Length: 322
Ligand SMILES: C[S@@+](CC[C@H](N)C(=O)[O-])C[C@H]1O[C@@H](n2cnc3c(N)ncnc32)[C@H](O)[C@@H]1O
Image (cartoon, rainbow, N blue to C red):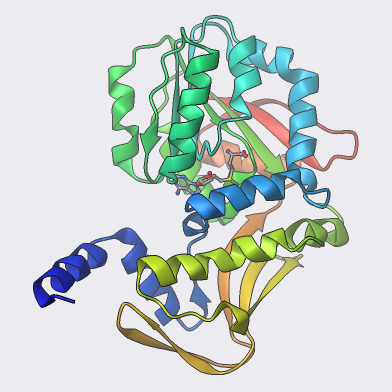
């Protein structure tokens, strides 16, 4: 390759958050990769497949709660609201809510995965042509993706955060993130948020280690992404998927286990992997209702109500800024 072209490409590469986060994560004593990077186009499609699996009770349980209580939820949100959805993905869950709301003033989805978000925006605009939809592409933990909100006037802002995405953050990170969200809202504004509840570890582990091995493919896709975007040479067959419930931390941890000692190169850097060593790729924290209400309060939200399924597997909370 032409040297000038290759150094420009390297400069661009080294400027990206993905490059910095991957190199820092692989250099740590416990190797880690931030779970937001699981969602490139292929990862987002795999996640959609996971949501359809029998073993993955989360999506269908949450959907059933929405179906049963959508009118009550729409009443809590109230008329004329602007719905903001961080980590919107394919935006499927918001559609019934938007349809039940009285004259929503707009919809502002944010996602790090552009392909899936832009396709969803087209679908929603075709279905609800009178609704203003502004799709914001990027990391919802960063200030820049929230900038577009300044151009949208509304009487009420409501954050919609389903899918137990909050569970991907440790409780301290979740409190900080919800505090960051609360700062985008004013008095009377709301938060409609889904959390997975603490339950039997067999049910939990089956959800993240499904019998059809789709979660395994989803987890390993992060290595394929590093190979293609950061000149990596991970051999995917030398890693195995592992997911287990950690009762003290109340979370399912997802790891990639190295099956044989070897060296891996990423963007010209070398990383040693010992047999049995893992890369920690995702946390999914589980909550009790009271534990999550306490977290909401610490983050600046007043819990208003929640809806759950008969088995108490999942909950959707409504909270507001008072
Ligand atoms: C668990 S999925 C949930 C998707 C959808 N909200 C649902 O409930 O089915 C997480 C979504 O959040 C996005 N995401 C994860 N971390 C993100 C971040 N830091 N900034 C923006 N989007 C993020 C992913 O691309 C993915 O679409």
